[in-house]
Each structure stands twice: as structure tokens, then as C-alpha cells.
Length: 249
Ligand SMILES: [Zn+2]
Image (tube, rainbow, N blue to C red; front, side, top):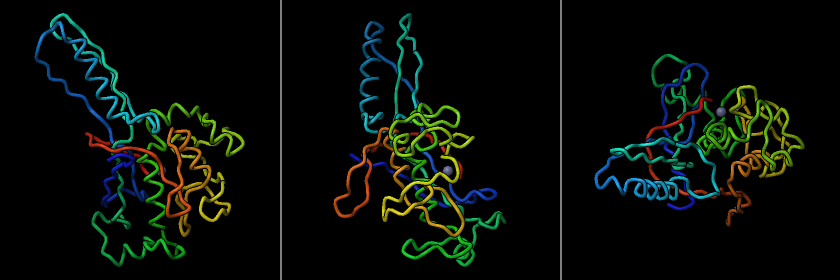
């Protein structure tokens, strides 16, 4: 479906203090050949064009990964370079919050997670909405993938939109390279209050901020007003794929 990323969601036992995991889909290539060796290079070029037109999903989304190699038929070698964008994503929530190697019952889950996004987060609980939002961003290529990597140099963010939003890209990325640094403040898109960028803290809800949005536009997404609400949607398309890439926490 156009303008959609299909994200598969589940719950499972996640180790230690990991609350959730999310990431974009990965991709693989398998080649089967029949026909004339003399047509091999042209056939590969046509397949490359077709794959990139579908799986890269245009220029308004990040490139998540690239598969490049060559394949030889007889004495003829053809090269390929296949880009893929955010076609699908995955998102997991922890359902073993006491790390007892079993699925928690509803009472224990309810004591740990704050599920109701319409009420303030209870003291000491983890906000389900905030974790979902954080992992959805990972599924969209926030924190991993080629586009993210091309915008990061050490702890410096190189993308122009975020530099403009934050005043500088220096120190914007944490030392592990997959998140923004802790305590980076911005402005909540809904309500306009000062708020840390989307991250996970006990007893606190984090909504999307202007800086999170700037990161997404640096990753090639385009923001458009959602017709019914003063929120934002992100342009993208959807299709199926193989494998998975995951980002913890
Ligand atoms: Zn994370």
C-alpha cells in the first residue's frame, strides 16, 4: 500500500531491562538464471531497475540497506546494486518484566506498564505509548540503516534540518551511535511544551518533538499535516520482505 510502512508487533521475553525492540526489515537476494548468456547483463540491469523502483521506495524515505555483488553466467559477469527502504518493520514489547523466564500475568504487566495513553503516566511505571513511539522510530530507520549512518560522524549529527532545529549537530548523537544523546531538549509538536526528545524514562511520557521530526526529515521523510489532527504523518510506501534488523531498547 502506498504511503504505508507495515510494522509487525508482538510481545516476548526480552532480557534484563530491555523494554522493547524495534527495527526496519532487512532484505536478501537469491538469483535463478535461465536463458542466453548474451542477454545476461541486460537482464540483470532490468532486474536491478525493477527492484530499486519497488524496494527503495523513491527518494522520500531513507535507504535502509544496499545489497551489491556480482553474478557470473558462463563467462559473463553482471554486477548489481540493490537499495531497499523501510518496507516493513518489527516491534517487540517485553512481557517478562520480572525476568523470571515466563510470560507475566495481567496483574504483573499492569503493575509494570502504563497502558492508557489518555492518562498521565503513573509514578514508577513505564509508559507503553512512549516505548511504542521510540521503537516505531527505530522501525523507520532512526538509529540504524544506511541513511542514519550517513548522517552520523561520531557524536555529531550532519543533517541540515536537525542542525537548524537544535543550533548545532555537535553532541547530538550518543556515544553508541544509535540514539540522540540523553537530555537533548526540544519542543513537543503537540502542545508546544519543552520536552526531551523521544526516549524512555520511568513515569514520564515522551511525545514527538520538533527535533525528532527534523531527524526524520534529514532521513529523507517528508512531513505533511494530518487532515484531521494537528499532528504529522510521514510519507512512505509498503511491501513485503525477508529477514529483520533490530535495535534494542
Ligand atoms: Zn532505542
